[in-house]
Amino acid sequence: MKGSVAYRSIQKRGLHIGLLPALAAAVNGATPITLDHDLDVLPEVGRHLTVSRLAELVDDLAARLWAAGVRTDEHIVLHKRPNADVWVLACAASRIGAVPVMLSPSLDAATVGALLERVNRPNLLTDEHKLDVLSGLPLAELTRRVITVSGERPQTISLGKLAGSPRIKPVVRPIDEAAVITHTSGTTGLPKLVVHTPRTQGIRLKPQWRLLSLMRKRENVAIHIPFVHSRNVAAMALALLKEMPVLLMNESDPDTVAELFLQNRPGLIEALPNSLMAWEGLSDDPRKPFASVKYFSSTFDAIHPGTMSKLLKSSERRGAMFFQIYGQSEVGPAVGRAYFRNSAHKANGRCVGWQMPLGSAKVRVVSRDGNRPTEQNPGRIEVSWPGLAKTYFAEQERYDDNRDGDWWGTGDVGYFTRFGCLHMLDREIDMIPGVRSSLEIEDRVLSRLPELSELVIVPGAGSAAVPVICTHDDRPLDPGRWRSAAADFPQLADPVHIPQAELPRTGTLKVQRLALVERLKDQLGDRA
Image (cartoon, rainbow, N blue to C red; front, side):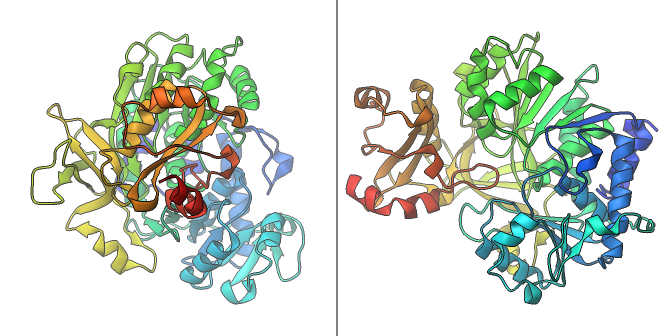
């Protein structure tokens, strides 16, 4: 089977992740998958697989889940330490018609407990480490059963003990029913559970299927995305159907990442914006770990132009390109744009892209005050297409409140330029009076101060705009250099310098701005 045939089948029947490994094996079972870590559930399989071997593992684990008592239509919450086996186990759960609910390993026990209660006694698939973290929760009351990937604990079922269970015929879920549930980033309170269907998951492949079609040969693809995220579902489906060897990464330490790239020589890297920021120092590494990369790709948040420029200049490939996509869990990819080596440094970081080809998402900007949205008067950004998530699990009213017919409110504000580029200025909830765009200021000051590793502008007392800064290795920042770099922004208060490790982040490394304000409320009040 050709990858294009498999893709057309998905567009017709939807993306079922339980069937994906077998479908990809029919396209090319020899496509290699390299891991930078051992699978917790099956450490003996090693770090070098093929797609055919992956399909076998998913079939085996599906049988074990069935033997453990999981049944079609049941929810199974996956919450364990970061590991690619989360995605593999989600495929296995889907293969028997269960609905995987993917919870980030970064969530605290109270949040996990609240989400388990919302799902109404699901199965819980976890590991011994997380069982210790969740020890204060009444799991017997919150769950139908608790299953561990290995080891033995009282009142749990171990998948390790169920090897050799009879194989189960795969189940195909209805195209418009829940297939996978992920959650929002949790930057503003308890995460919402986002319901994806086979149809919505398949539709979201369209824009990047076209992008990958630009690649003239099969090249190694390095993927560094949280394994529980909806974007990982799309990234793995695209790579495997395109027969591209995959380096599936868990490690984020720059030195380790450099070694991985030198060993595997990826032609494409897809990673979180904050991961790429953490790795940009490798652009000066004399070993040139990014030399082989022709395509960098990032979603989630807009990325700083300086980071893109450094990465592109560290590639030795002709026509190297950075492709940025703006979207969110509820809408998938909304707009995108490409950046090139000689122009990325001049880019406006607030320009998140243009609407993509026919069949992709439609985007509009709606007035907040009755006047036409402009740069000085940004409006609300809304998205419409069949790829919108179906609902928020157990919060239909909350979901409906965010829709206007076919249009979904992203919560962001911005405007379209006369050339049709969408500029995203801020989250509406994060807007500060007197500040046109906190994100724009952050972009510009970061470009002027390479010693900064992060800059976040938050409201202080009296809605003053207070910069919270972090530096590489937590070194002190020269006050004179700060004053010079921030001279264009007199509305800023004096900066608050905190250690990088104290920045509250989500599982996708976004800064939790409201949590940061709460954590620093005494300091922010003093500075304002």
